[in-house]
Amino acid sequence: MTNNKYFFLVGFLLFFLACKEDSELLFSEVNITTDNNSLVEINIPKAFGDDEISNNINTEITNFLISQLIIGDADSNTSKSVEESITTFNNEYNSFISNFPESTLPWEAQIDGEVMFQSEQVISISLSSYLNTGGAHGILQIAFLNFNAITGKPVENKNLFNNLDSFKSIAKTYFDNTVEDKNTLFEPDNFVLPANIGYSEDGLILLYNVYEIAPYSTGTIEFTIPYEEIDSVLVLDSSR
Image 1 (tube, rainbow, N blue to C red):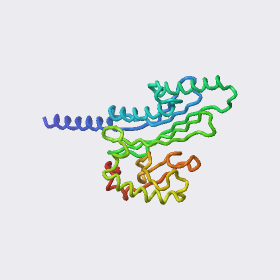
Image 2: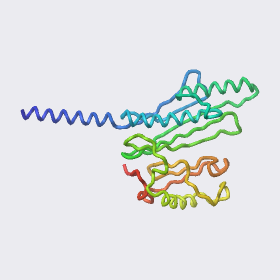
Image 3: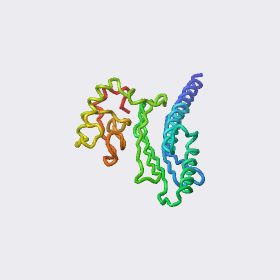
Image 4: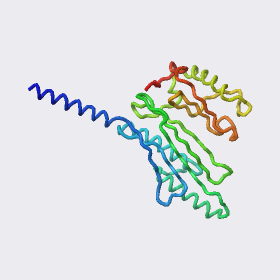
């Protein structure tokens, strides 16, 4: 009887560990393309392991990819998948060339992603999108997506902090030290937090995209605030 109890406990422990391993959230890089695609290159992280969490994260990434491939009015977009968006992008280019055969500039779309940070509480993913539809120069847009690691649901920037005013005050100091020439800004006397705030190994990254607060020539503006400066105002713990 004692031996049977021993084997039962060992078996239960092995089963528990196997289930825990199966439920661990992991990421792998995937390439997404379609037949007859010559314009769009997509390489992004895909979550797997826990179905509910991974589905939530992958859905947000998919929505971002679709939004980046829209040509024209976003309200008229009918694409329901990334593959459909790629096909539509190529079709739009072919239609453009038919109407303007003298154009010699090819279109292109390059979207890459990486997991910036992953802990038991928070996951941050960076997605960079470079789009050129024949203009003088392409546009690079970078997006940070933050997720609650327990649910996989996205976390808005305002919900990353328990005291947004205190964080904004700290961020302004780092911003002022980063941007030496305030005359390059659209509104030099009006400090606003960027649309992109994400966790990294070294601290919280704040990134302003091109045209967000300054002209194209300024490029992206980025700085990192060490966690020891802001741990007290973070809702999601930065420790591993």
